[in-house]
Image (cartoon, rainbow, N blue to C red; front, side, top):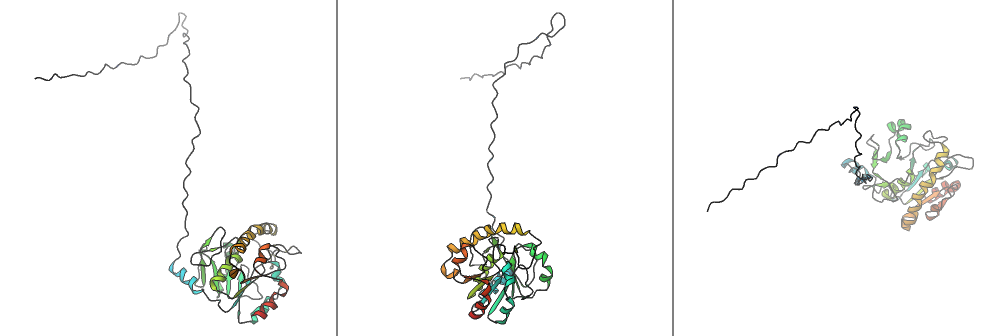
Length: 284
C-alpha cells in the first residue's frame, strides 16, 4: 500500500502597507480619526528583595595573639587591682600612696596619670588614644591591653577582639564587650586575670560640682558637653551587667566615687573616693 505524501505549504507573506498621506482636493491632509488608546496599566513600584546580610564573624585570632591573652590569664590571683579611670574625682585622690603596697597592681585607662606612671597595665580601646599618646606607646614597658582593631603592634601589647551589644565576657580568647567604656571592657580583663578584688577609681560618669569632666583637664577629642551626654548610653551596659552577672562576680568590684549616682553602682560595691585609698591599703 502506497503512503500518500502530505505537502504543507507556507502561507504567502503579506507586506504591511506603507502609510499613505491622504490629502483633500486643496492639498491639505485629511484629518484621520483618532486611534483608540488602549488602557494603560499604571506601573506598580517594584519591591526589591533586600539582600541578606550575613553575620561577619571577627577575624580569628592568630596563634601569637592567643598566646599573649593566655599569658595574662590568672596573673591577678592573690592580688588587688586598682583601675584608674579619668573622671574628675581621680584628681582628688592621692593615688601615689597606692604604690606603697606590693600586693596592688595599677591599671591606667587612656590618659596616663603622672603621679603613678608608668603603671603595670595601660588599657585603651580608641585609636585616638594611640595617636595622642604615641610617645608613651613607643617607650612603655608594661603590658598594653587594647583591641584587635588597632593595627599597630608591639611585643608587649595584648589585643582582644571587641564585640558590640550587651554582654560581659569571662573568656578573652573569644572577645570582650566594650560597652562604650574602656573601664567596662577591662572589668572583663580583670576577671580573666582573676584578681581577688578590683577597685575602680575615677569612674564618675558625670561632671563634678565645678563642671570638670576629666581629672587631667581638657580632652582634645571631644567637648565636655558632648561627653556628658554619652554617660547615659554607657550606664546602660553597666546596668545590664549588674542585673545579669552572678553575685560572685559582682561582689569582686568596688566603685570608688562619691559623684557616680547611677543605680548600677549599688548592685556592685560602692566607696566614697575620699576614703578609698586608705580602705584599699588596709585591705591589701
